[in-house]
Length: 167
Image (cartoon, rainbow, N blue to C red):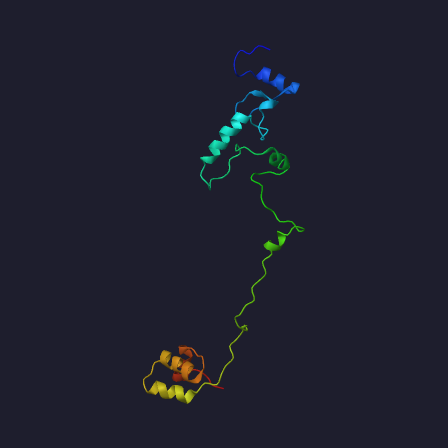
C-alpha cells in the first residue's frame, strides 16, 4: 500500500483490521505489535515519553487519564469506572475490620432531664447576707462554696424579695 504521508486513516484501518498493527493513542497512527508497550494504548516510544512527563506533574495533582498503565491493571479495571482503583473493603476481607468505628464510652455522669430537684434553701442565712449588703450573685456563690447548694442568683433575688414560696 502506498504511503503518501504519515497520517493515512484508510491505510491504518486496513492494517488494524488485518491484525498486524495496533492503534497508538499518542502517535495517532497504526504501529506494528512489536512496538507495543505494556500499556496497550501506546507504542514503546510514546510510553517512555509519557512516563517522563508524569515525573514533571505536581505530586498532589489529580491523576490524568493519559498516564500510562500496565497491561494487567488496564485489564483488571475493564469493568470498573475510574482510575486509580479505590481501596474498598469487603465483608470477607480483613480491611473491613478497620472500617468499624466503635462508640467511645462516655465518662460523663448521666444527667436526668426534666425539672430540677428542689432543695431546702437556708432562707434565714440568705436574708441575713442580703441585709448585710451582699449582692445576689455573691450570695449564690457563697451558698455553693459553703453549703454545697447550687442556686441561681435570680432565685436568691426572689427569696429576698419574698416572691418565692418556700414549701
